[in-house]
View 1 (cartoon, rainbow, N blue to C red):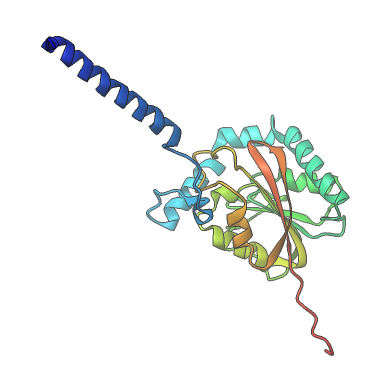
View 2 (view 1 turned 180 degrees about the vertical axis):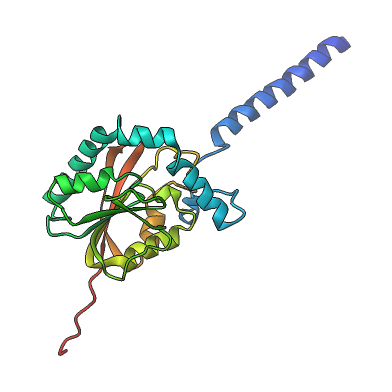
Length: 244
């Protein structure tokens, strides 16, 4: 058999190597950033905060941004109130909140959620954020709520992704909820949140694990300003001891 010229051999070797590299890259693109399969890793904390103060300062950079605050209080004001009002009306129909509920909106910025609650009849409502916005929003850190145990019947938040310590975030909700009280979270599962987020959530499993004093009521898809999932918990009432 006549040997092949060296140039053909080199070409064939290069072709084989190129094809191997091509298929490797294709495989990498598919598998480089898949959602984690381990339920324990379905909640990932983003790195980059040297101190808690540096984390707070980054959150303040968004909250105090004058352009954003102008948008929140003008162009977005009525539109967001209407969307939130529709959410809360649906929750009222499901008996998860009533006009007699004492309600808290966590991370309320300028208080569209609070205004929406008041417009649908839940008058005893207040918001909490790092920067107050009277009379709708008081100052407070959701890792350390400035309220007594068992204060609220209902708590709502769409800023879970901003929690650097999700266990504290949830712990404070369960502390300040009354037994039988309801917590509603709007979260993003199908997309990553904005650059100010401190964590990424891939499923509701970590939330169920974090809410140790509550039971899951329902999970449903929503369209909430970039957030796609509503998760509702009810704080478990203490068991009544027979004979007491």
